[in-house]
Length: 268
Image (cartoon, rainbow, N blue to C red):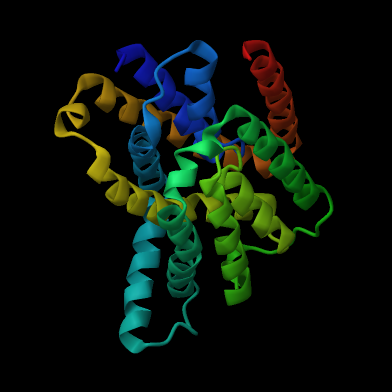
């Protein structure tokens, strides 16, 4: 594994995990563009662990409060009096569809769905959905108003992120905005929702990793780069969408899809 390539892939993963443009698509496409060796799904998941570090650190105060309240509510078997306790419950519930999709469709995700043409289709189709949710919905709700139906719909939407090009953050933000959530509130819930799924995927995919690879300098450098750039992506995207739409990301997705198709035709 090349040291510089690992840092580049880590940086790209960290940025694109939270920008709604599909981190998996970029990790598939970069090796294809530059004829690098595709390190596969296990390496991609390992890079996501850097993003997990960023999520935990950036939202550390929220996590402490949510986990504390969730445990209190769980001990009383009642979540009615605690917004943070319910948020903990909703994060767990919304994670289930994505976790099941990862287990059931892992072979598809690491196989045929990594074909550049499928990636181009996913980037464009789900980019248009993101645009529609941003342009044509009334976005007035905060996560304090979340209910079980919202939670389930966002969770089901996350299951589609197993497909390269969909974008986990993009599809969950799309689902949240279709349910009426403000842009930044949709993004925050999407980012926090990534934590349990990434952690679970990391544990599940660790069986494919060799200890010698995990301890190698390129491998560690990729994870560190992912963590740093993921932190920056969270910070600046939340600031950006408080005042602006997601249109620039939709445009990027569509342009990238066109470039992929052109290059695919040229290479074949």
